[in-house]
Length: 415
Image 1 (tube, rainbow, N blue to C red):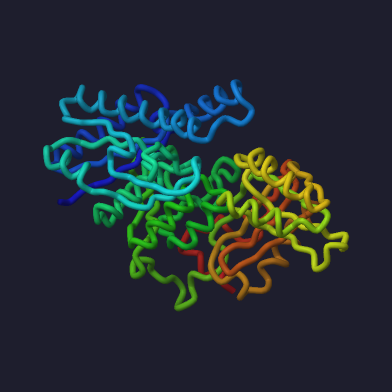
Image 2 (spheres, helix red, strand yellow; image 1 turned 60 degrees about the vertical axis):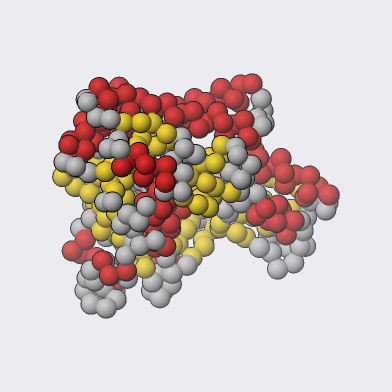
């Protein structure tokens, strides 16, 4: 069976009119004989509203109950989408993640998809129905609802594509695709029509909000191309290539090397651990499956340079509650620095081009933007800068690395 999998983001379903418009698109495809699975996110700011409601009742809500609560946002979207399709004469059924065959393991709030049972969706598709799946959620081994982390509907869609042997997963959102900088910060930032999954994964992890990093990684592992386009305008799009042979070279064998994009993330905090308790702190965070980066590690606990790491704001309260006791038990202390943000260069072969880091630091320095920490790999160089200067930092790096060029000019950046 040739199955098309589409995912509609929450910003594309925020109003009833947007839901109706998306349903019309799906109805047209169904009329052409396609077997369709539609994965939906919670509408608009629904998830934030649910989080705020829980926070008003409890400072640290029970994690299982939170997952049950947050899952209702996507189920609301799925039911409304199915109602809109049926109104158009299209047989449709809304399903929870569990009903769609998605299984996950791990901690509540950050589950990892472990298995996809294709039978529940196949039976519905064979009956000619459109399956509208609540994203962001799955069933854990205890038989409970578990969510996949913010942005997890992307993961749901790609996981279903992998489970059903589909080679392309379509993502419909409120932007034209993946740009070389956030167009809300850099007006007119060029669109990348094709990008490899490794580079896109780095962009997503470092702040590009178009796709979830884990979804991109999943697509790469299973050889799935992800097409990102605007739900209101299909004339432009980005293909995130999950198949090795599909990214054309430009400018010779190493033509694609160099800086591809600049990303930023304001929703991070630097956590500083004093008193030689760094190992215990990192062990605790690792056991919680929360990613950290920009790690500063002293060679000796007595050094003035203390251990520090950067982590997502969304998990900060949970981490501090867990880490504080561990650190105090070893005679240490914890402080947070919320005045910083991450700005990153993302590309290929960055460490092979020694001028990249010094060029970036010079560009930031010319605008009197101090970088508190620099971490670099071949694919990403991240700078911690004052949160109040993020837009200036993005502009400085965008100009320094000629990111106003379209893709035909990529080879100019590899020198």
